[in-house]
Image 1 (cartoon, helix red, strand yellow):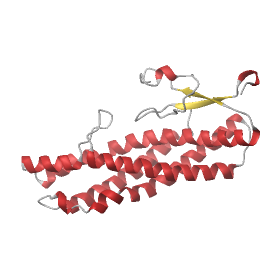
Image 2: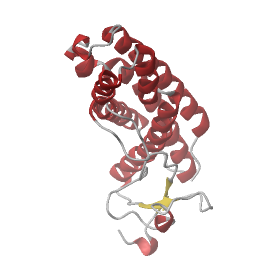
Image 3: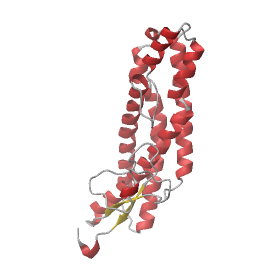
Length: 233
């Protein structure tokens, strides 16, 4: 399933995230001071630091969602009230961008993630720094992993997939509301050697459990849509 301007959207979102994460890292290092002291970081940084990033991410997700919704309408060939789709896009992007940035911020603060996203928690790095006598530069280098362009790109790929899938779902929901017709979502992969073991078994199969792409970080799967055969709903 092709996404409209996928690479352009991914690059734009990655740029936004990379820039904003760098700003937040600079704030954190400034708070820590030299020698670094975690007690210098105000609670507000962890409670609300994600909000500035969310404000920049939201409009990119809205654009991605609306582009794909418009493309789906052209491909399927049935027009709908796009004002309703637009409202759904804005509402979804605002809620989802808040949720995802809060989760990212929580993970940045507290957890060591698995191989898909390996970052030590800030508190752990600082504590380790005390034990090992690390300098602020060495601590900064370790924290870079959590605020890096690599992480920004991973988030951008995953959230671009999610936004464009939601764009098609918003269009289909409005189509079904206006016409009473039903459409069946079909999981679509690139069906090549790069498809992961999680997604490969789903290829070209109906989505019946409500779980849509992305199935994992860096997932680039999509959704195809079919009308029920023989008029069955």
